[in-house]
Image (cartoon, rainbow, N blue to C red; front, top):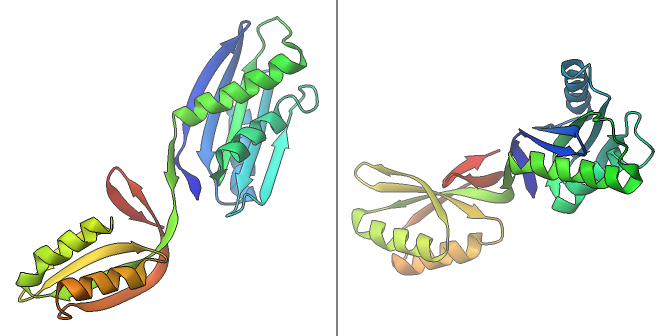
Length: 212
């Protein structure tokens, strides 16, 4: 699931009209409404503050507003960008400062969509997926074998603890639990011990695992 991790802001100019897109992660309709109100207060002197948001695992909660622009020329095209990109839990406000030249229906649609794309280009978008934390206990002779096996399976290692034994913490994507356990068991001749955690959502951000 693609989700917004960090918001951002982008701006375009079309026939002297400024379009400022502010994008922010939101978890509820209330958060989205508060963000939209905040942007309207910040850009109180703008001609329009159009908005759209998509929330939920299936983008099931959506709203959009043309805020005075001709119907279907701003809010819906903005929402279409979020839906097309498959981005969840995101809200965007595009602020327009009118430049004196009318853009026409098609021009408005293109400008608002381009503004949202520019805003998203300045955000951090992540891929969330379900998985389970796996703690593996082994002796020192099994460490290298387990590390090699995890690398072959493209499993991210979150940490390694050293005492009289070695504990390796890894994040295993959902559906790969059985295969990973089998490969490690084979590699260590059955000496490794496993402790599975609860199912969580995780994403790889700057080469580090983030749990949600």
